[in-house]
Image (tube, rainbow, N blue to C red; front, side):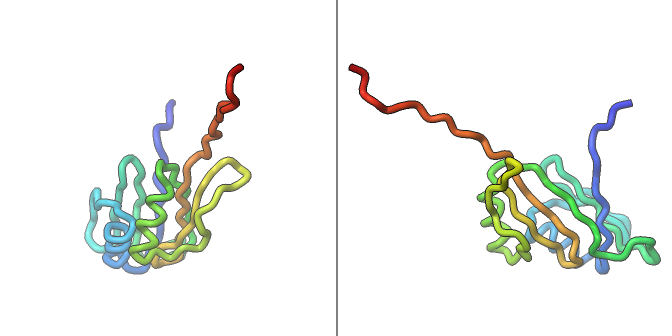
Length: 128
């Protein structure tokens, strides 16, 4: 058995409002939608499913996901400019990642980050 991917399911209060946030602010596209209760959004290879089914064992706003990406600096500026709720500013961390955190309208936590690449520098001393 091989596992190929995992998709977080976020429980939301209002599916239409969540879809607007994920598409207009975060740049995801709607992959599918089942009425007013369940939908999937995708950006590149990353997916999130949104569930507004009631009743649910899970209250809205308790989900979290970490997205590995490239050019996290540009994405941070993009979503911040569109009004994303930033809860952790973009910075380098001791665990080798440069990332930031935000919440969606229901309080689900999303973090986006990229691995910090160690830059190698060569000596610029003149050769005699």
